[in-house]
Length: 515
Image (tube, rainbow, N blue to C red; front, side, top):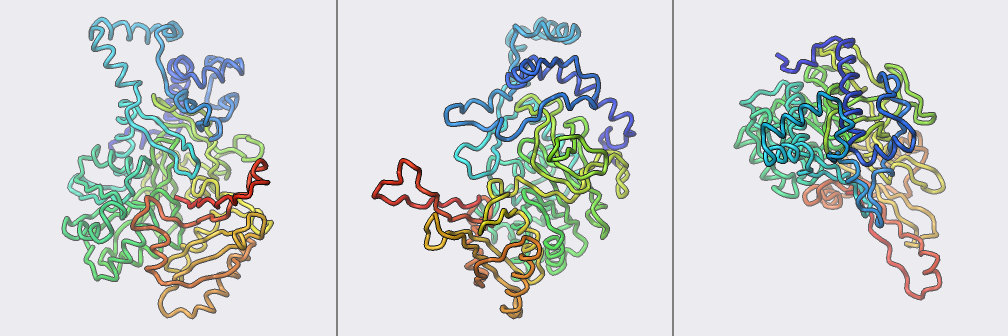
C-alpha cells in the first residue's frame, strides 16, 4: 500500500498545492536568500509577487549549465545558488514566517536557534556533475535537503515494491555522484539491510557476486553497463542468483536492446521473474525518478518516470524557441527546485530531450496520479562534451552510438575511439570501433552489418572496426578499475595555441577519456 499522500491525489488538487508551495517558496526562500536569483530577479525587474500561477513561470529567465559552472577566476559561482539567510532580509518575509522565527529564537535560545538555522541552510554534503571539464560543478545539500533525499529514495523503493527484509547490494561506483548516494540514503530511509560495494573498482566483480550469493541479496543497483558485465560473469561462472527479484539501473540510459540482454542473463542465473527498472536523474535535480514495478515487468511500453510534485516543477519546452509545450508533446526537460535549501535552480535547462513529453494522467500500471516523464529520453548529460562533435566534417551526436551498439544482439562489448590520423591535430579524423562479438558470429558479416547500421542511423561510418577479445576490451573500458566505463574516448590532440605556433617543442596530445 502506498504511504505517500501525493500518489493518489487528483491532478487538480496536487497541481493547486504544488502551485501554492512554489509561489510561497519564491517569496519566502528563493528571492530573500538566494544571491544568484536575487540578482537575476532585480536585473529583470521581476518581483516574486508578480507571479500568480505556474502558468506564468515563463517570465523567469532560463538557467543553463554555463550560468552555474565555476570559472578559473570565479570559483565561487556555485555557492551563490545556496540559500543564505541574512537577518537584514527577514523583513521581506511574511508576518507568519517572521513570527515563527521570533518564537524559535525565544523558545530555543540563541544557541538552539543558530543550530536549527545551520541544519536547514548550512551545506554539509556535495555532489559533482560528471564530466571532463577542469572545474566540475558542485551541487550542495544541507541536512534539511538530505532528509528530502531520504524521502525521495523511500518513495523510489516504494515504486519498486521493496520491503524492509529485502537485502540490497549497491554496485554503483563510489563517487560524489547522485547514483551511489541516492541508493545509500534510500536504503537508510527504507530501513533495508544494504552492502554498498563501491562497484568493481572498490570491491571487485568477484566479491560483489560472492556477496549476492552468500548474503542472498535480492535487490541489485548498478549502471546498465556494469549490471550487464556483472550478470554476464555470473552466468559464465554458473552462479545461483535465484533470490534476485529486482535490478534498479541508473547513471546511464537503458536501451531496450540492453534491457533484453540483461533479462536473458537473469534467466540464466535463475532470476527468471526479476524486474529490471530504469531510473532517470541528473545531478542538478538532486534526486532520481523511476518507473513503477508493474511497468518494469510489463512487456508493454514503459509508463515513464514517476515524478515528485512536492520536490520539483518540470516543464517541457521547444528546444529551439524556448516555448512551453503541452502535455504529451516531446521537447527539452526544464527543472525547477521546490523547497530545497542548498543549490537551488529555477527553470534549469537540462539539455535532455524526452520524446513523449510529460503526462498527468494516472499511471495505467500502478494507478498513481503522479505526473510522469516519458521513457524515451536522449540524455545530453550522457557524454556531455561528446554530445555533438565534428567527425570527418559531419556534426555527429555520439550519444546515438550507445543504444545502437549496447542493444545489438551480436555485440558483447564495444568502445569507440576518436583519433587524428598520424596524431596530427590538423589531419583527418579517424573513428575506430572496438568490438567483442558474441561467440559463433562470423566477423566479416557483423562488421558489414555494423557499418551499414551506423551509416543509416548516425550517417557516418567508422574508419575501421577492430575485433578484440572480451578481456582486452573490458580492460580498455576500465569496468573493474574506473568509476565509470570509458565507452567513448577522444584521443585527438588539441591544436597548438596561437602563441605556441612558433615553438620548437611539440605539444603532447591530452588524453580526454570519458569518465
